[in-house]
Amino acid sequence: MDLLIEQRSGWVRLTLNRPEARNALNTALLAHIAQTLGSLAHNDSCRAVVLTGAEGNFAAGADIAEIEHKTTAQAVTDPRKDHWAAIRAFPKPLIAAVEGYALGGGFELALMADLIVLGATAQLGLPETSLGLIPGAGGGQRLLSLAGRMRATRLVLTGEIIDAATAYEWGIASHVADGPAFPAAAALADRIAQRAPLALAAAKRALVEGAESPLAFATERAGFEALLDTADKAEGLAAFRAKRRPGFIGR
Ligand code: CO8
Image 1 (cartoon, protein in one colour):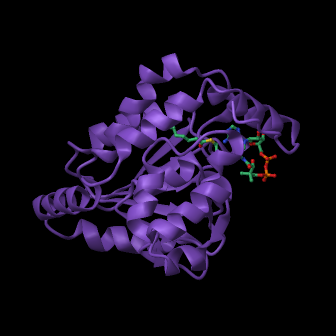
Image 2: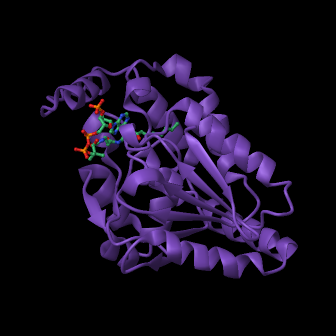
């Protein structure tokens, strides 16, 4: 099972479970997250969801093996877009509990949560430009909204990875734990699950719309799709595989 589902008292824990690939988000895993959240939306015993990753990492991005073969034309009709949208449309509070790596699409997934709890080991970054790509699931936009233009630009243009304390200081996370993230996220979910579900849903809707309606999601997505056919994307991914530095040519 690439997604573990555990019912707790009034809320549900979902664990990304592809530790051999650092929980990279391939299409099947993304579909499972979207489908599971879709059914939890109608399940009264779930008033909130905590999303975690197995074996000490959140998720090291979209699955590079899949992106390698993806073209611009395929991306336009890619079902992954619907999965990302379904995740963001989950109407109940979604809490990301982040340990270890949350990179690329993994960080973008965490940024779709309503609250982010960072464990002491968390390392966050958007390394896509090192691969000849950009964040395509709205992560650049959400980072812009949370951390401001200079910090978002710094992370997107350099691929720099930041630690938990920095991310918290920049406003990217709601909570930071001294040790592991999950106990703190569970305490948060316990507290939220006792509050009025209709009020939580109405509050979430208004907060998300207020924060995200000005963002340039379509521009970001179109940029990501256009880059899939470039020689630099092929070079970036080949270099990652070969564990060497890429030589980009601007084509
Ligand atoms: N996809 C697929 N496999 C991965 C990924 C990934 N993103 N990350 C790691 N793996 C695999 C490795 O290939 C390796 O497999 P194998 O054992 O078969 O060689 C295994 O996981 C372990 O990886 P490492 O040996 O590299 O483990 P380390 O602990 O040394 O390093 C890192 C961990 C730092 C996480 C390193 O693996 C890494 O840099 N990974 C890639 C990070 C990255 O560049 N992520 C961005 C991917 S692109 C992206 O997310 C685009 C999102 C766009 C959204 C789409 C919108 C529509």
